Amino acid sequence: RRMKDEFPNVAIELNGGLADLKSAVEAAEGLDGIMLGRAAYHTPWILSQVDELIYGDAPNGLSREDIVKQMIEYAARSDDRSVKALIRHIMGIYAGLPGARLWRRTLSESIAKQYSPAETIAAALETRRAMSGAA
Image 1: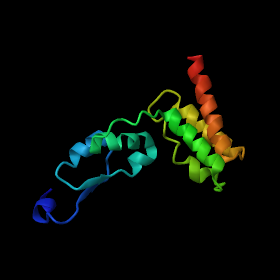
Image 2: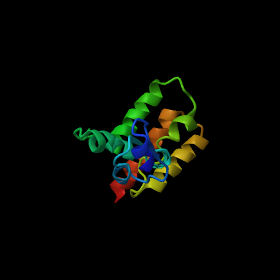
Image 3: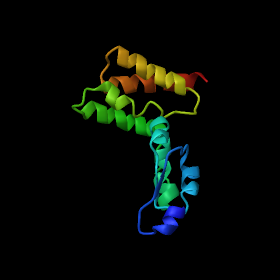
C-alpha cells in the first residue's frame, strides 16, 4: 500500500496466499487488482463468483454440475485428446464438498483406463450422482 501511495500511476496487484475470493477482495482494497493462481487451480469454483463479487453482476445461476456438463460437451467436440491437460483444471471443482475425494479418484482412475476426456468426466459425474442418490 505504501508503494501504491508513492506510485499511484503504477498498477499494483495483490498476488500470493489468497485462499478465497472474498478475503482477497478485502485484502486488495485500494490496490488495482488480485491474482488467484493456486486458489483458482485447487478450487476453481471460486471463479464463478468473480463477476458477482467484483463487478456487482447478478449470479449466473450455474451449478457445478452445469459446468461439468458443459465440460463434457466441450471435451466431446474438442480435437484435444490430452485427458490430463483438460481434467487437471476441474479436479477441484467439488473441493470442500462431500464426495470431492470420490470425484478426484474417479477422474484419476478413468484417466488410467485411457478413457477419452468426455468419457472421463462423464464417468466421474455419474459416480458423483450415484453417491448423491445413495445419501
